[in-house]
Image (cartoon, rainbow, N blue to C red; front, side, top):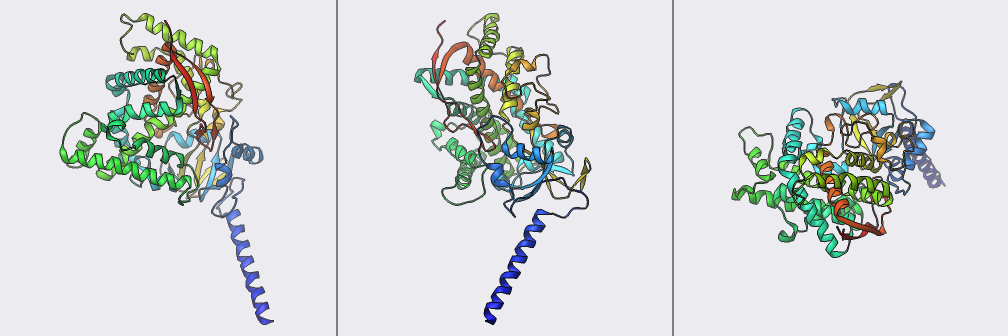
Length: 475
């Protein structure tokens, strides 16, 4: 009898303990008033709902439900972190425009595990500015104009001709391979077909599980992500150390990087340099290939847009003295409608669905307090799909950009980020998209044959790819 009573008491105390745990999790302490919201389950929070895939081309169900219930500023818990989600364009612009100790850049634990504490993304102040200037030496406007434009133009022309010779292609895979090949050669003189180290496959595995539950068990997307990143870093590390030991110049970015490492009072060491190479190669092709895939679908579905693009690009060809000469920087800068199409595509693509900042000390925003140590998540998609800013916001309509600044961000357009963390590769991505369109619409005819459907989880994914039948246009 006494044992049964004791067991009941223990069970009762456990229930009280669990209930208290749930209560304190759901009602976090705060020296002020927290935004409304729900913290979900302990530890897991509302991560499962946030990561749930959806097919609707709209603001995510996760955000829509909470916006309707709590308004543009609400609390939640994602990835094991207490978080404030902001969909208010004024708040977002203020937080992102000027990074400070109170709103510093933050990555999820899974990102940090892959990229390391020495990643450029986690750096601040003078070191971040140094790293940014170093990357601009590779992908900034001067480098694009003087070095990369011709290489990107040649690679794009060659790959599209290869697609046409095969008759059909999965655009999503074809574009990723094209950009990867061109950029890897410029970055570290790597050629997948010659080196045979399957670096691209490792990156694909890395990307497939990058935004997933951090469960490192064989068979899970996260486990594949971990293994892919390790193998990719191993390939890059081997190339780096071999180059550093042999001192043989290849006239690529790795040459410049090793020079920086070997300076007397160097900012960089081997670990930071290798991490930077890994990150640059990832950033160069991942988001741009998704944007071009979506753009191909858009212009295939909207013949008026395709007609206007052909008109602009055929006019460029007609103005050339030599029709076989490559694309020039002046021609690229003249592509007004093309840049309208690019802006409209990245507005709808929302490839960066969330931007995170960590709060350094208690901050007051619109009558609410965001406690020190919490994370603020900025959600650009809500601004990009706001009907008060964009008429019929879910419609692909490049003409909405007519007469507007096509090369700057704003409170309502943050496709390339904002402030000091504005995407350093934005000019590279826009040039690559424009070059692709130039060759694609002037020299080829195509029809969609399969796929084209996409899901978000919350990043943009084409589960069935986008398959087209493509042929050289008869002149």
